[in-house]
Length: 383
Image 1 (spheres, helix red, strand yellow):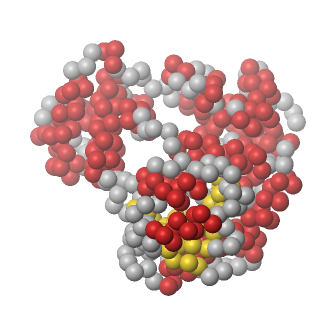
Image 2: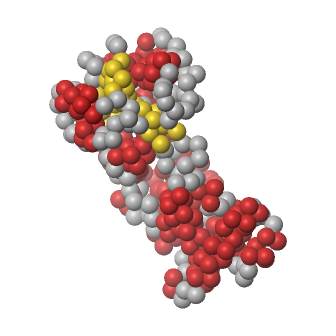
Image 3: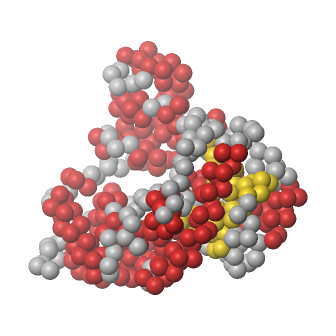
């Protein structure tokens, strides 16, 4: 299929109006994200089986007709490994897609693992080896070369070619709705507003801090995020994680002291020392009721290592009953999330409706067995 390069508003409007409401639309994006917090959209690819278009967002000011396609519940959108594309849709169009299937998720239900690449998927279905040499190209530079456009077109032309077979296979296996559910869940979570005052929990060393130190880390992380958003810079361009952790632990009283601490990046102090000091002083003036609770580590819970091992084995057995691989049902994060909730760690910050293993299709299949196993002390019986 010959690709159409769309560079003006009327051509975009015409394409979007031509899409039937019962269409299956294969989509992809190309973007650049080397020195920015948010991705810079360089190209949009779409194919409905009749037309294959490459939409130039650098030339077209109003992309709202395309965003409306993504939000049309009657059109099935298919995309491969959509996590970063969702960020593009969010920041370029404030567009939360609906009725979208991530084919990487779909392939995992068919036994291909959680991280099957697009090229490997096409090789599996069509026996075609794709050229991925343009994957690191500068998609913001104009004009785009013929080779770039051919590469971009292949990302949706082959995707649309295989979708009928993929839908047939996953439908026959009985997992289509579950794959759609996991795709929708990924989208929903990606579009949850960022709680800047919970970002400090991402620091894996935060459990080592007491409540007053956690307060400083909390406010330093929130400040860094606001600065990164304002300047559209990666978080570590503002300040490194280990710098913020050291500042929270040491509670410096002046910029000179900051520079003497082991574990800080001197450039962080040089460029942001005064700003960090202001954040620290302001946070230290807050009364104790603002202090976060100390963080309870899962691996400090009595018997955690053996319990986690038994939980993993048990979930593997449950998954095998349904001819599923364990990673499709539960990864380490799923299991730790479940244990945090079950043991009510950190004042039960994880609420039941947030626990993947007892909600959605996983809950329908596994909840009763899983809770019974847990209440019996995570003790394995001979299978």
